Length: 170
Image (spheres, rainbow, N blue to C red):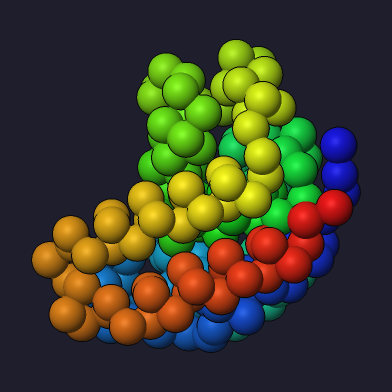
């Protein structure tokens, strides 16, 4: 349907920022939004903190494409909805983002976007789906134990994602 990956990745990396290792973040060492565990799984070996610090956008782009964009079938989603799902998939896991989309369209919430989900997506307005996923995402964040620590940033990110997604609509 569309080929927004590069543009969506650029916006996503603005959200993700650089190297962090926050004591209350269960992801641990993270750079450009990629956790040490995700990177180790990708390269199939243990990596050092310095290797994590040295990650570049070019190094993480294939991870985002394979593990999040393709897994959530974002190329099959309309412009705007693709970014909404992609950004949340990266932030909270592909299954959670997929289930939110499935809930929004009345599909079985199995966490894997397939032909049945995509068929139901086509019966809904893109703006309504973006809004619905936005609200589900915000409720999810507000129910996390770490909302007091990270909630302001998550809320800002969710709002920015919604705004950018609505601006992208065809």
